[in-house]
Image (cartoon, rainbow, N blue to C red; front, side):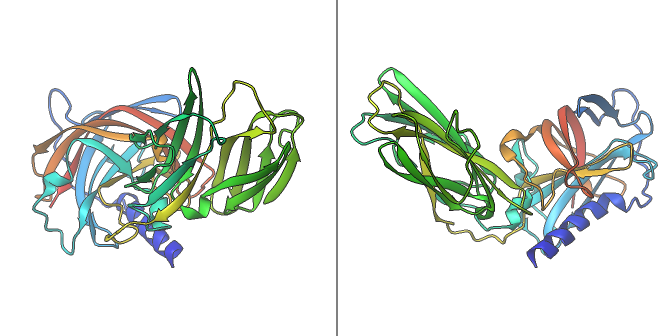
Length: 382
């Protein structure tokens, strides 16, 4: 049912731009153009300006299948049958709406950083999830710890807990120090439990047994040279050639769910007496918090659709794609009221920049990277 609902929601979003219904052409302004984009698409410069080359700024509103208000703007040519380099922006309201009446539009259309509406939202209701982190360090050492939770916050505790507000994938880093020596380890922590995994170990001198925690159906272990990726399995063991500190890496994948990730940790093996130190951690989901909003709403998030000259349709949203939020951004630097559109709706002019991976809506293996250094677009509000 969830996959069916996601597909219907995605089709509904795309249908807004793909219907290509004839609309009244907006006024073409004299002098300095109002709406524009300066983008780099897969390394190719693409600049669009409303009022030039038959491009216009269309605006409108819609209500999605969850009753969420979506404010949109499309910077595209007049002839939608071609739609070369068309961009469509969708800003999702911060509250559920049963009608298109909205009195607090400024709560949504404001400056700041927005997250992209992510297909991962639909898999688990984990907004507000608490996760406990446990640093790995041999007994008897005097270590200090510095955590970066991947969302702009951190901790100096050895075993902290942290609450994440958004269901993205976070690159968590731990730096361990012991006097003048320090070492850092980083692991991506997926909020989607279907793709979450790690490992633990037990050891007897140089002989170490490893155990996978989490989901997957394909495993590959790297115990360092000369073992490389010579071992596989949900559980495995390895005898290290000598005492020391080794960085062990596990690759895990889950077919059909786009789960391909690695998890690494330094292991202190045998009676090691050198000056090097180990950095590693494990983590556990404590609870999902008190989440009172429905799954799959994408409140206050952004979707951008793009039509390429060869007729392909791309979107930042794909319910079946692994969308890394921490490598993308959408930043709004200025918002101001603009004149009403042809439907009599009030509109707002928004300025900012963004970068993101866009997924082909018909072929998950086809994606493009778009980096927009500046945009000025319009969106409508009821």
